[in-house]
Amino acid sequence: MTEHGGRRLWMAKNEIDDRRRRFLVAATTAAGGVATVVAAIPFVTSMLPSAKARAGGAPVAVDISKLDPGMLLTVEWRGKPIWILHRTEDMLGLLGKQDEKLRDPLSQKPQQPEYCRNATRSIRPEYLVAIGLCTHLGCIPTYRPGVAPADLGSDWQGGFFCPCHGSKFDLAGRVFKNVPAPLNLEIPPHRYPTDVELLIGEETRKA
Image 1 (cartoon, one colour):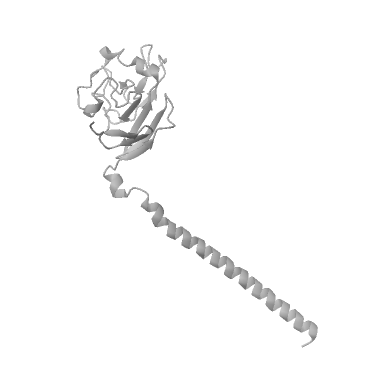
Image 2 (cartoon, rainbow, N blue to C red):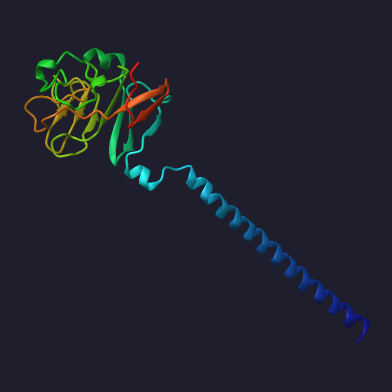
């Protein structure tokens, strides 16, 4: 073999070795990445509530620190929509002004824990926590905070309206008279572990 031929053979062999080396490095890196992801899955999964816990109604913690006045937040608990309404001072001022139009203004029906059987149906007056299902047929009402809209009439002071069958609820989830819904919205058990955390599904602790 000539000198030039041997040099070409050596260069070709080195090029093949380089390609093989790059392939092995890439394959090893990819395998390492997959192993890292697989190893992380049990850790991430361990931080989530189990399916059994969710089905059993495990408490749901909600950060309410960024819920501005007037805003409505919806979360899920036991497969149901839970409304968290941060009521404004104006909203609170409207409660009690239409009691004569309500079916159960004093919350005498057991639709709330005893600690929420008050004028605002809440632990903290500024927060309404309610199950967002109409007590007629389980439809989801819409949040209508505007006062006197054209479609709801001049006496509407804000609240929840079920467009399916026309049921109306005030800003404390209390049902109006002469609508299909027979009961106030249900208030789930809940408590506030801290000023900015709401725990749904766990009874408040007695002092």
